[in-house]
Structure formats: C-alpha cells, structure tokens
Image (cartoon, rainbow, N blue to C red):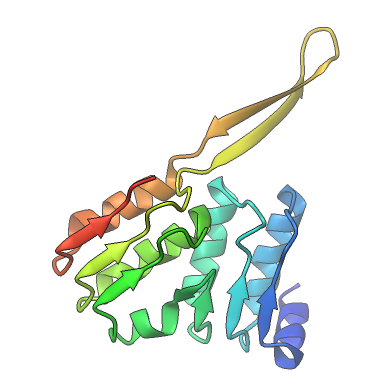
Length: 167
C-alpha cells in the first residue's frame, strides 16, 4: 500500500476523497498516505473518520513533512511558524483535522489566535451489532478523542491568547 501511495502521489500530488469510508477504507487510507511521500494536499473531510483510525491518520499526516495542506489546514505554514491566526471556522476539519492542528501547535509558537468552531470535533463511531433476536442494531458512540487532543494542546500552548472552540 505504501508503494501504491508513493506512485499515486507522484502522478497526482493533491487528493480529494468525497465518499465516506468504512473501517477497511480508513485503514487502507492510512497505509496509502504513509507511503505517499510526494503528496502535497489531502482533503478527506467527507470520509467521517474518528477514533483510532483518525489518530493513526493524523499521525501519518504529521509524519509526512511534504504535505502542505490537510482538510484545508495550512500545515506548511504552521510548521514554518509563519501564522499568527488560524481561522478554520465551519471548515469541517473533523476529528482527524483537529488532531493534526493539536499535533502542530507545540511548534507553532507564533500562533496567537485559533478558531476551530463549528467543526464537529467531537465525532462519533458507529457500533453495529445484532440483538438477542438477531435484529441488527446501530448505536452512535461519542468519540471524545478530537476534543481531548485539542484540550491537551491548549494546555501546553504558551502563545495562544484567543481560542474559539464553540460547537
């Protein structure tokens, strides 16, 4: 999958996924992005990733220093510490996006204002199972991993003076 990712990124350095993915799709995406060293931009805002898959994808995105934007987040500018304000209001960055922002914040020491309001950073996971009668049941389980990631990053930030996290 990593080799495939690198070959795809060589030919097409900007990817936009517009479909929701299932668990297998999330896992495949993580492996493909991990190998896509020529990837410049990735937008997966409609794929509804949360939980462990979001954490793994955020980790892979942060490890790939060639990615310049992710879900509309200006990663390159944050890495070079050239932003004082980051306004992602209503950009639908998702759980994976807020994890990337949180991962970049310790090095973004010039960042004084952050707006990630209206981004559904809480996320949810879908639990599908059968009840004792064999009927399929679906439960939506809250996923606090994005909220926890940004809370931890805010707790150690020394430069932020304004943060808007409203739902």
